[in-house]
Length: 332
Image (cartoon, rainbow, N blue to C red):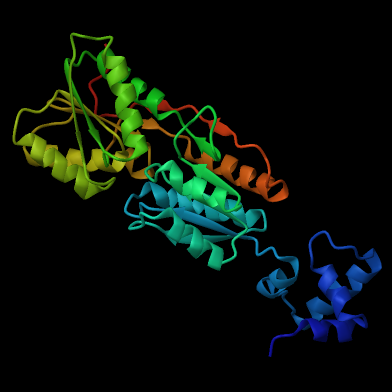
């Protein structure tokens, strides 16, 4: 049987409450007492039960990490960075899949049942109401990859998707494309709306460039491939800004199936710069979103909120950059 707190107390010759204080962050215990208890615990192989301790401290150290796009490979990187970042801070991530969820109140009730200390909403497609619903119930929340606002209702760590759309448009204009299009993800997603808005905004200053747009039904390879197959039944644009790398790779597959060459016949620029975008057989020109910095900042902000739940909501924005590879014609 595993050693218990009482076993450690007997071995160390102290009270059970002294053992409990030794393994409770911030509790008052002398150096001599700590050494006795830790020595006895090591000899017995004792490991504190954090879930049992939470009944006393009312802190579980559980952080709900919720998302709704588990089909997108970029979130493998996101989840890896988040889980390691939270664990390094002594917190325990609870991964929640909201792929089919439409009711924020149901999500709040579910996370309440797990007694989480905080929630990270890691999504660029869930509406702002999801994160706000947690805040309204008094749960510390960070919206990662959420929609930027100069006066946010909750803490937001993200990029300026409108500026990213302008960046993609300028990249196509500079290369001399005269017929371009936007291939976005789900039309209702705020990231899709904002990237399209910025794209059209920049192109409005270039009247010589014809522009069109369409939407895939998900941020996934198959959705991008299906939409490009549909577009390929007519006349294609000279270049496409795809609102996500995985959409771009699906579109690339469909274009190649028609016998067209990229970038000779059709150009592509994606968004995110996920790992496979740099593979030699893909070599996608894309806009890099600084995933690691965004996740690190989100974890730091969550830790700060656990210490000060009334911290005033702030928006932290990170810049993007174009990564040159092989799916657009070269700059003049």
